[in-house]
Image 1 (tube, rainbow, N blue to C red):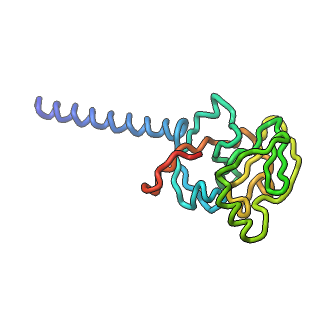
Image 2: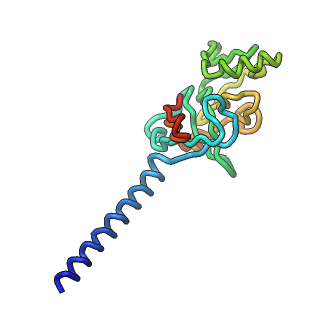
Image 3: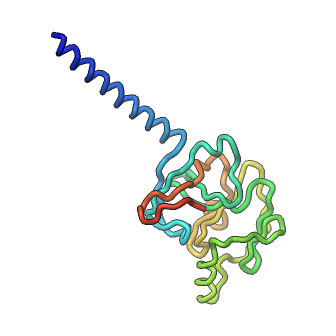
Length: 182
């Protein structure tokens, strides 16, 4: 009899441990970190189609998105991964392939490869636009592959800060390309 009771207690202990682990995973995934798969080439060469990322979902509950952050945006029917270019109060403009934020040229070293390719085609990577003043509660985003990106310039419009789900932190797959996202 004691043997059956011991096995029952052990089984119950295992079940409690498994349920606790599942609840913990659910809470972490829902509120703190979540996996995300890149779909498309709009962030190339920084991120590639089918890269898997871990997204920090809690960071923007304690701070606001910053220029340069790569964020996940919840759209009506899908999610988008884009780079924050301007935040509320900023004025964004592009002239002759130079990004100006509040009238100052911004360094975008992550665009070097794409700019070389665009120049070889005889075009600018980013067409002239603006100036655009970013209102309260909004931000302006663009993909790094500016010739092939739906973003704040052409379809997504200005992004509500509330629709940003999190900041991309780490590429976790493919394993040979594990890296921090910048």
